[in-house]
Length: 215
Image 1: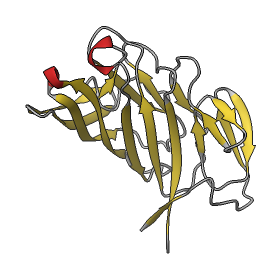
Image 2 (image 1 turned 180 degrees about the horizontal axis):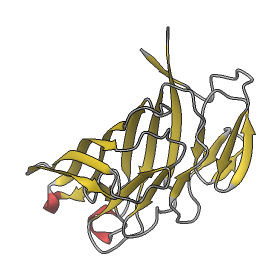
Image 3 (image 1 turned 180 degrees about the vertical axis):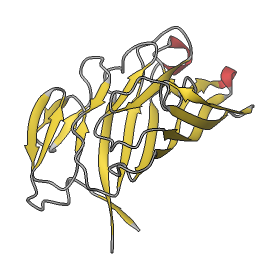
Image 4 (image 1 turned 90 degrees about the vertical axis):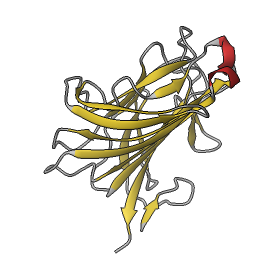
């Protein structure tokens, strides 16, 4: 059993030093951070992007059991009905990732994967783009779960769930799920989530939560 720590429900006085959009912040709450662009003082959260950008989650604190990433994404790319998400750990751009994922629409089902990749899910992770047809108002939800992220003895395993709207002519939706491995033993202290063909659109955001198991 795990607890995904809610920043509105916990205040244990343990200071965490965080970097948000290149700004150093200190918070007493028992959570990692929402890397959402602009501080919303009223809610205690960081508001969604107000200018297009990519996400770099920096200085991730160590010592928790798991990380859970939740992102709400839409790419500025207009060249196709979807873009692809590029996910990397610790700034590693070498061919140190392996993955398999399943992609489904209402009409087709396929699987793809491979080793020696330069990002966590290669070019297989469909994310909503700003292509006028059909996804003018649609965003993707991306979820990653990373157990043992702070361990320094074994490779890092990741499960993923995502998808994007394609429109009726394209089979309505992509539904994408998969598993990947970062073939490095270093603790994860940075996660980069970028759009392959553009930047993340205004309104996109990315939140990271710590998981702590009950003993």
